[in-house]
Amino acid sequence: MKKIISICLLLAVLLTGALAGCKSEQPGPSAGGKISVVTTIFPICDWVRQIAGDHADVTILLDNGVDLHSYQPTAQDIIKLTSADLFLYIGGESDKWVQDALKEAPATLETMNLMETLGDAIKEEEVVEGMEAEEEAKEAEEADEGPEYDEHIWLSLKNAAVLCQAICDRLCAIDAANAVDYRANAQAYLAKLNALDAAYQAAVDAAPVKTLLFGDRFPFRYLTEDYGLDYYAAFVGCSAESEASFQTIAFLAQKVDELGLHAILQIETSDGSIANTIRQTSTAKDQKILTMNSLQGASDENATYLSVMQANLDVLKEALQ
Image (tube, rainbow, N blue to C red; front, side, top):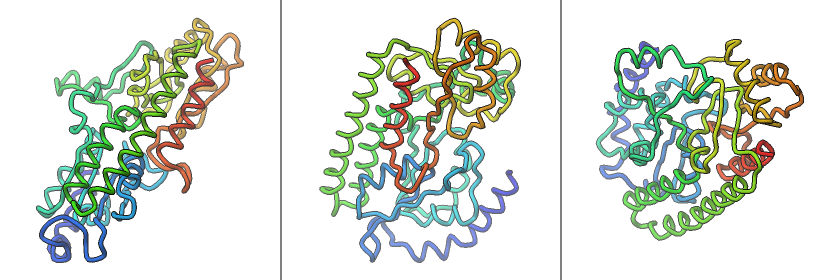
């Protein structure tokens, strides 16, 4: 992997001089009147589009179906981000490649590390009872490398509101001529985020069940903490594991029985095998298998961050019955 990244960066270095000649000395609208924004994943891309409207050309690096945790940039990806006016990325473990890429970027490139923007609101990745710890996490702990933070910050509507305001402020600074539009768009979008946030809280408050159980990776820690939900899962959100041990399956099936859960959850990339095995190991064997979307990519061309989070709310309501 490191060799691939090095080759990509070498190609980017060779092209940086030519690209720099195409950019203005200060970030801002090009001759076509639009600023260029590059993002890593779909939620950030959609936030920028909602706020910037027609004033920005927005590019996403990760195609639909590409896993953030295994993504490696191509030479073309690095060219795209180093030739932009603004580059936005999550800033977690999966984005370690960014720092090397930015060494080759021109001084005019503005960047936003969204985890840094959230500051103390980010949370350490946790291993709850019954969950399989990754070997990498064990090795890091033994080597005293410090905590690993949960990078799935976009799955909190509260985080989304904070980040959208920060994105608006950055766009206004880069393109002051269109600041009025950016602020108006952001205000309207924040109202929608806050309304959906309130709908989530109302649904959880009215639900008879307050625990989720995932037969899968669990990227929804920010969401569950926002609304005071408990959870059990097979793996942490960034786990590369795909097969659960007998002990994990047995523990989760026991929790299904103990809590009287009527649903077992999974994320959109799952093949369903773990969730189905948990169901078959339970006493009732009749739980629904429901899917929540972790929003790394758009499910279809008409999807938006809000539409997918609304769909997740519909699933959540069913899971908490």
